[in-house]
Length: 112
Length: 118
Image 1 (cartoon, chains in turn orange, red):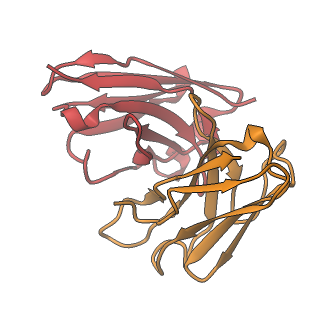
Image 2 (image 1 turned 180 degrees about the vertical axis):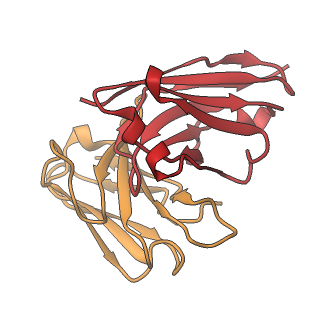
């Protein structure tokens, strides 16, 4: 059971927009920045969004991040077949019972 | 360009030990906070532990499942990060990734596979 909750899967047709949610609590998302990672099949994860809404160099502006309260959202516009991957949210947790860095369980994006 | 190359994975029996290494290039390791993240087959990401840069104290922290069994260290003169794993259990079977970053994990290695089985 992950500390952060993500939907197991989402799907979208090419060109559509899709959002992936990440739900946490006041000890993690509520007070810390959120990052998002993309893991293409058979490869290592890659940073997609950091500090909740910033994109590293080379990440297209089709990808966006936001946060409201204890929930974060990854948005992908103009979905492409190459976006088929697992997406993970992550943040630090300040509660004593959790690991300092926590991830969501991951969301598999299927492009129809 | 940040490059992280892990090595040292393999097959080990339950109760055994293994030491993973991660060689860093393209950035100054001594200034970096480094973490290990693992991924069991078909499962999600799990943070294993972190070591701060020496200038920030060089302290380590670990996830509960590995605390007391795993140890992270660094040799900045060799641009190398280590993960010493003792008393290994079948549930430690995973791909182990070396990563860099403080509030986020910006650099990732390709991973090294650890299989714990008799």
